[in-house]
Length: 314
Image (cartoon, rainbow, N blue to C red; front, top):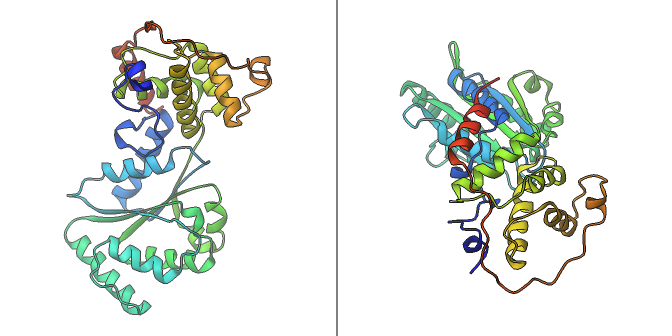
């Protein structure tokens, strides 16, 4: 038996892997998608989505990519994995993502190939969109100038390419390396931390999708998760995943506030200055397995109605 069996789950509810089916459409994620989809549909050029570490930017980028119909868009997601990217590498990768065969090593020739490909996409009735994740790593003036050049590729009354940067707030400083590019930002949106009610809805949403038939976290535990995580989805996942494992080891039928505090202490998280958080109870030896006592059942219908209400644009 593992914690999935013990808490009657079909799969891990709090994995930090970007699993699209676990996407949580919080009010701010909904608003971000509406704005970024509008940018793509109207081919407005450059969009920016910023957020702190663990805010869900990559998940949102993948969700946007999946939501763009293949019949209408030639869309690609480019993930920057290091800061040593050169302008030549960047142009070749974008060209490959958009379907350019055998991109040239010569920059002028490559730009010609890319322009011809973008024109073909346009003539086919589609829109070309490139999403760039971890864009804060693109921190040179040369790279910013290349992006400005790409945005200048157009036909009468329409741009041929839209770009969306996803990354940390440093993106805004990078853009200032090329002021004309900074002036081309058509849409900018910031992902903030989840509010307490959204944190609760997020936890229940992921549990429901993982097959939960009951709620293994007490209301106080959920509030503690929000407090220690500051509403950051990645930290919420880590806290909840560790708490479920520790609860299984201790054969705890419910995860309570004290369990969350102990896990948070182990992870080095600081959720405030209450006595429970600053001096968590000492660990106890786990008792021998006993019959599993079930907690309060999750009302799936109630959760769906609640999430639907949250997702409505304000």
